[in-house]
Image (cartoon, rainbow, N blue to C red; front, top):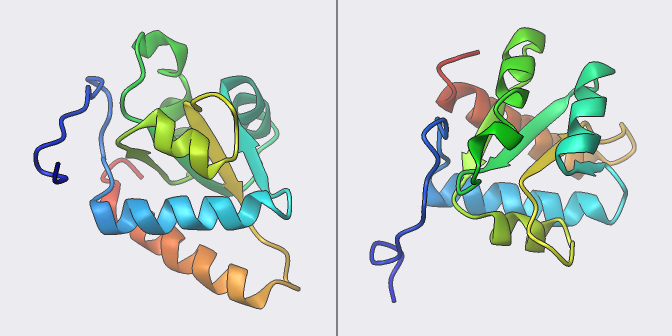
Length: 136
């Protein structure tokens, strides 16, 4: 089954959705950052981090139902100027974040200055997410 043949449920607020190349890059970066503990995952953890104004990139799953679970988080991101984007599946997001269950939202924090390669990749993804998001 090709990518074009696969259809996923997409919530009505899921905008902007990452293209396949950006999604692949984001999920790989999340998997890399999870090993050095620069990830917040889940609605509760990400909401708390946003209230504390933690900088980073927020990645939402586009197939969340009911939408009310995380409908307040994109608004918080817009108010704080934190870029966010949606990926197709919460299963893929959960697998990248190395959780046993699907994950609806992940906050990728800014890597430390010691991790030069990670910092470069973070800034590259940050710029791509910011470009694709018309709300920020």
